[in-house]
Image 1 (tube, one colour):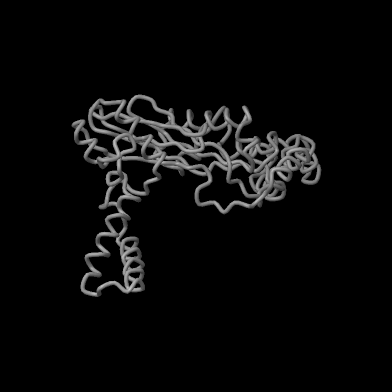
Image 2: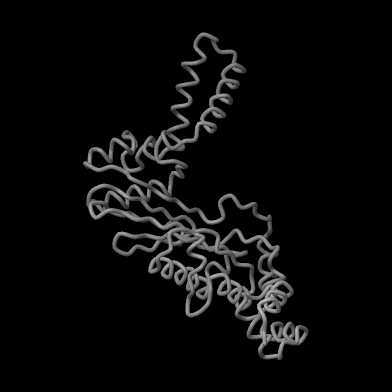
Length: 290
């Protein structure tokens, strides 16, 4: 009988998925060494060797169904793989599975089974067939009310995606705001969402800059507040100049359309991941050697 502890031991030794480890042990009558060889022969244990590599390329996507939307980011090591049809299919499969599930967050999404396989095991299987480290980095599930509308925008074939929720039924406006979010990289919807520690840190930096410029000390608070407003225009979606009408702020433009921005989510593939510098030749050789 194949025990759970045997499966766990083989998983730790090979880096293969739980289901594959169980199959390997069953095929070799519980012989640990033979099971490892079985996994190697199938190419499944290759995934373990790739676990320490950096996966900062990949794709993000948005899927919408009725009042529910899902954003997903899956990473690969190289842009070559991100353009691979098998990889694109994996990203779409994950997004569709989450969209059609009861998942509410990343933790519950990871418990979803696709054709009898947990997402974690599916990723490991794809690492073996595609030949690079892959990572299901994040997802977000967004729901709207019946009197609201989704807007989505994808840039550079899925390198940047954005989703917005607006009050009303103006889908064209919603797409324009999603385009704004994708292009202008806001970090927050409005000033109320900016954490106080972020503002205090920026205020301190701006005050030091103003002091170093030798400006009138009596005017420093006013100068710092003015520069802080400029900072808000960079990081807050509603305070940014609207890309299609740059004399108006996003908030004013949306108000002129009798609407309101409820929420936005923006994914940029690989953001926040420290990338290893590689030249094009190295990237090609990596593909040849895998």
